[in-house]
Length: 589
Image (cartoon, one colour):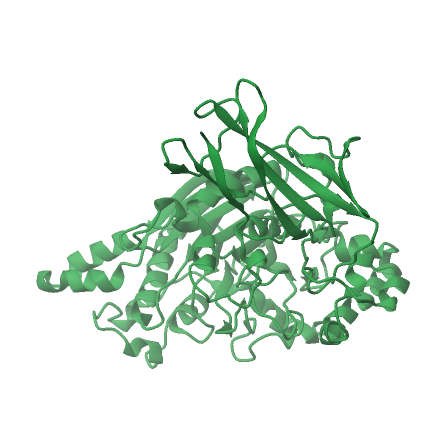
């Protein structure tokens, strides 16, 4: 007979909007084990599994800490109440929690006051783009109604309501602060009667998904105008997002992120939090790195399609990787279908370039060792897009407007500086060929795993690498010589360096968040092991001009006691977002 041996959840802390799918271990009559689902439509050995979810309604009201959402609140900020900030953000679990969070917390008061003075709608302005609420009507949890009339069980001051009849349940806003109960029982397929005892588990209290403080778009030249969603609406402009989202394989393979709560590191939570953040930026073009192929196909592509995006994807090659092919990550580029159409796609596989290089310059007896050094599976995805005629990002009516967007993830160990530089140089030479065939603005986005003062950054930003650069000392294969080859003619400029060119008191706080030597952000990657800039958006400054940028964060904004990823930010990188306008012949290197 079929029997249930064990049920458990990967994380016992449920978050609204994040699916809960228990692990159910079954034993068949032949004593073999299985974890496959056994629905009524496909019974096994004359039996199937029946599932139910319950919510406990308590007479006692429960408040959740806004900083540590798995903890109950013990105090409330009266200033939040007076400022009409959403009440959930006013609770704290301990006086120390409130004290530690104060520098960050008072920003909410300031922004609420500022929003009221500007438009009289503080909640929408400050919190609207990262709204955590999940509509009950938008979630499907089996055939049970959300508010069933039947009370399943009463126990003292508690009442249990049935809320779902499928294996998977997605907590709603109505569940916040309540415990959930999962019940699994074997049912006879003929009699439809339960067989044996029901296996149950209880969760912790459901918590709201913590949201980060909204990052605002800052008009660089003061000419931009914000719409109700906080998006720049200047005529003839478009926005580009670049974001390394941290693959689940990397997040879960080690204790590298042990400081992040396990529930916040779980993929069901992170994917919803990442999607909410990405969609909230309202970008016209989205460049994502470290996105697993299964997550692209099963989640991001269909979800972003609902928001009007078309996606392109390039998975890393697998000469080095020997794990599950579906978990290999890669680069994904999405664009709004109402703004752009897809013209052409180029795929850059650095492994193939490495093979060609070794065949050309490495003696046969040394080629195996050379390939072992050069082959790292990295790729780049290049998309040529065309602006829709009815909404072109350029003030040239009647003229076909193309845009080339390169998206890459250069992930090479730090001791292989020559390989890292060679990959960036290979990408740039490929882009030069595209530029030679068409007069086309270019964007080069991605995680280059290179700090601002490195040789790859110098090549991107300056068009060449100085012969005295210390990175050039590492070149055992002699692939960087002659040094005059390490150059390109693309007039690339880093978008975020535009903050350094601004004037006025309003920009001083943003300038303080820049490296004074390179004018790059102080960090785009923030873990306990490394804080620094690795991500960039470069653009051809003879054809594009920066209109606005997503504001940078400082360490205080991320809170003193944490690192990334965290419950608020679900990657170890920060997103970069820039708004551009086409402007021909503005700059030459």
